Image 1 (cartoon, rainbow over the protein chains, first blue to last red):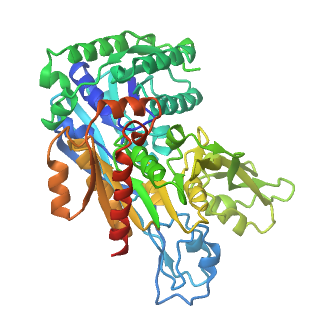
Image 2: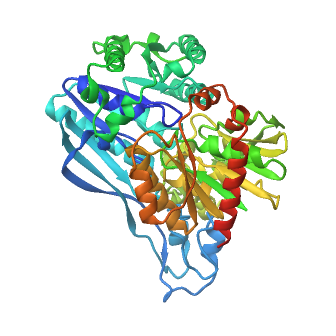
Image 3: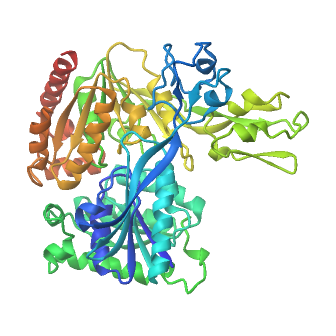
Amino acid sequence: MRELVIISGKGGTGKTCLTAAFASLAENNVLCDADVDAANLHLLMNPKVRKRTDFMGGSIAEIRSADCSECGRCLELCKFAAISEEFVVDPISCEGCGVCVDLCPEQAIDFPVQKCGEWYISDTRHGAMVHAKLGIAEENSGKLVSLVRQQAKTLAEEKGNDLILTDGPPGIGCPVIASIGGASGLVIVVEPTVSGLHDMSRVADLAVHFKIPGLICVNKYDLNTEMTMEIEAFAEKRNMRVVGRVPFDPLFTRAMIQGKNILEYQGNSDTADRVREVWDAIMQSPSMNLMGLKDFSTVIK
Amino acid sequence: MIISVASGKGGTGKTTVATNMASALGRGVRLLDCDVEEPNAHLFLNPVLGQAEEVTTFIPEIDDELCTGCKKCAEICRFRALAVVAGKVLVFPELCHSCGGCMEVCEEGAVLDGNRILGTVESGSAGNVLFSHGRLRVGEAMSPPLIEKVRSINENNGITIIDAPPGTSCPVIAAIKGADFVLMVTEPTPFGLHDLKLGVEAVKTLGIPCGLVINRSDIGDDGVREYAAKEDIPVLLEIPFDRKIAEAYSVGKLIIEVRPEWADKFRDLYNRIEILARC
């Protein structure tokens, strides 16, 4: 079982548009959207939800005013300033540590488990897909990401699929850490800008911790070819293979408006050919052809 | 006046709007880059920064001499950051949420005040603009406490512009909570619209007025404008796609450097926000 995770560091570099196109090209795969905070892959895949499950995240403190003696102990204990002078818990600030619940002298604080989102197993025209929706302003995104990836793996095992294609979140924090651990390879989609390079270098630093091979795809490369070359040189230095360049092309947006990927929208375009070449380069890379061995010579440095 | 620039979707132009508005307004403006996972504003403003200040958070450190192995600390910890194995407490620093429960329940005083580095905060100035940003330590999962630290650097009474991270979960809340106005930046595409709706929901839970900037406004479709009209969200500025702007962005230049006529538009954007925030 191989899992390819598409990430970027910086948001809006084209992760989802490329993942959707790869879904057309991949064979015998399961799709996974690990961007649970602002998921977009479903907008291109039109999934038919087969199974919907509540995601129960952490608990939140709730003070029963009838039993509260207003002693102020909880206010003293709360490190997150989540309790007001009137002894009401702000659910957005509450971290769910339960310290007030355990130490309230009157035992006047409940700690109900919260529904923090939903996750889905769906069918799409390019195979099964596991995706999720985190509730607005919720915590525990890392937990939901881990859950979605685990479910995609289970599903792939059941169906005998040998590849999971995972669309990752932007950034380098909790949901990204949860997205990349244990992956076979990362495709880092970069745009040729100072921010793109800066953010990619931070996400590469993160990937070093996990000893994962990294592949680089420069998207919108023609917006600045000099910067593209700088990024490719940087990639080389960090032992990341460059799998290709994709030009800036309004076709991506037009395809998106139709709910399609670029190959479905205009498969005979030059850009579509470039995307196919990138996919071939990914699938031919050593990191995706492990033959059951972990090849540490390919990991990001 | 605190304005948070947020978006839902990444890469829509938050940093572009925040840095151009800050620079166009100039004197008395403070820009706080709260996208601590991937801070970018400095790449466009080139601030002169002072020494980086390390930001840490509490984690327990166990004094094995005093510890009796009673397990109370592990029992209160909801994050499984403490475990007692063969009478000895093991700490998993990366799981700790710094609630202090372990320290509170330890009767032996064996839980000491240790710390974990979250990242750094740097401050300085870029011309007239006062500048601060946070940089999350690579490998650190929790960004909200660092974001709060960056936001605490706000002693001026003037205009504070916050560059928020993408998404709608806890880091975004940390960057927009307590703001007077949230400026949402989107692009007029199905992805932009979908994530804008999530972003607006997050802003609504906090009860903060918001307005919209539509970036690359001539690509895509009308979904965003229709949504804004229906929800009564004012569109305060539209920035058409301009290859010259995109190329300038790629090398770290502001719009107002390559298209000086935009300085007035960004000042006007601020004026409109000020009126809306005061209603």
